[in-house]
Length: 229
Image 1 (cartoon, rainbow, N blue to C red):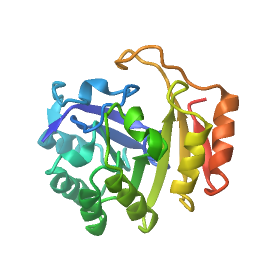
Image 2 (image 1 turned 45 degrees about the vertical axis):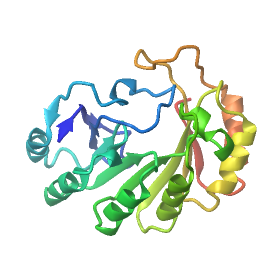
Image 3 (image 1 turned 180 degrees about the vertical axis):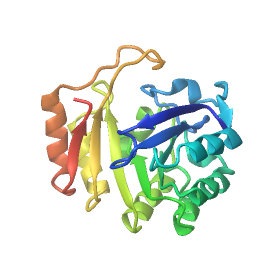
């Protein structure tokens, strides 16, 4: 398997752990605010393969206590479970970032006990989902299935939304509150512009707006917090 990026140490990506973050190329969404736009089509040059990653993790035993997978969309890689088994054999807990588009693959990894933490993006309200993802249309059933899978699982998880002033409004978060009612945790992440974001003229909402959005979700989700502000 090609690995398209590796952050060798992070205290942020895997809650409560000193982890590394593995970036995999390819995604079935085209979010215009994506920070990893060069990974969307999977054409970014790989930095290593899975054997090199496993060798790195072998050497980092005792220094790292977690491995986070992000992308792109990691569940597009059919060989991901095999790699997770090998990482699990080294003794590492594993976190997965996902857009929730492939609940069958998510379920298989959950059932096999390959995941310790899942962070799933909730892009927007159902009404505005496709637009926020940069798509003409989207089937929300797989995403809704993934939400239910996580909420009925026995692992730690979070839902999160990257909030863009030009793409989100209060009604989106009122709808999200109904969608994920009873969830363990929900985070609103303020958009941050970077050179890798393809589209220009996006901005983060004000802190006041973010607090208002968070308050809307707190009506149905107890643990709601802000990130990036």
